Amino acid sequence: MPNKKNIIEKKILVVGLGLIGASLCRSLKKIQKSNTIYGYDTNKEVMSCALQSNFIDSIKEDLEIGIKDSDIIVICVPVEQIAKILNTARNFFNTEKVFTDTLSVKSVILDYLIKNNLEKSSNFILSHPMAGTENFGIENSCEDLFLNATAMVCPLPFSKPESVETIKEFWELNNCNVIEVDPYSHDKYLAAISHAPHVISFALARKINNLGYIEEFPWINSKGSLSDMTRIANSDPEAWANILKNNQDNLSDFIDEYLEELSKLKSIITSDDTAELVSYLKKSKPVK
Image 1 (cartoon, rainbow, N blue to C red):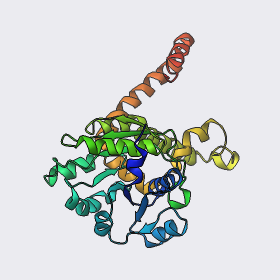
Image 2 (tube, rainbow, N blue to C red):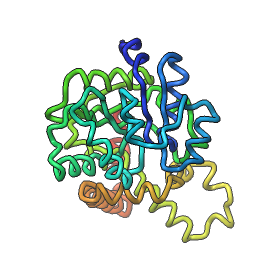
Image 3 (cartoon, helix red, strand yellow):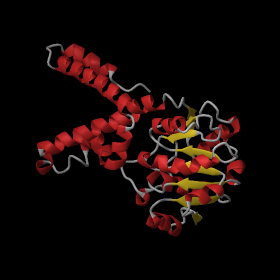
Image 4 (spheres, rainbow, N blue to C red):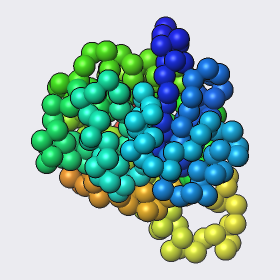
């Protein structure tokens, strides 16, 4: 069980108040009443909305001051904004504060740390809650977004054990199932289990759009198997473009393997061997 009292006593700064950040604030508000939740975002209207909606206790318009005043700092910004945030956060590395993030790509953080000789940072514990929807923005935030989600915690080689434990407890408190993942393997895993599914969905949706079937069958993107496949193609294009570009090597390798698999299935479909097709489909059921 997470040490709830330990987390409750902490002052928490959530950096970035989009879908993930705002949902995290709402989750924290729901599960505990004693701690202080600060919010920071480059968009003042978003910060005002978070405060007026009681998602946070206070706005921090200056990131450096916000970090100074906080014990746990959770970075929930899009991939393309992380370097700017780290330029300020780095001044507090190897202190008693504990940093974590929610980014879907870790290479951009790892590269920054190496480039800036910060590989020995002991209090930045990378993490990634596998939660989200195809919707985005604070207006689509949800207090139960992290319920039963898997949170990947990715300690760095010099991470302090107590900082790692704090972040594990943090995500457990937000109703996540926590697993530990090598930060240098994270992006390869995500290419297969998250990024490629989005790529496939984007490509399928675009193909259907180009065929013009929506005019004759206006329901296809809201009901049936096609809508199940293309739902996540509604995700934020700018955010996902940056995610995909920052994991392009792993993703490209997976796409090549996937295309080989599609080619194999195509060959079986066009053959006269129905039994082989049945066998292939049976073996394709998801392993649980």
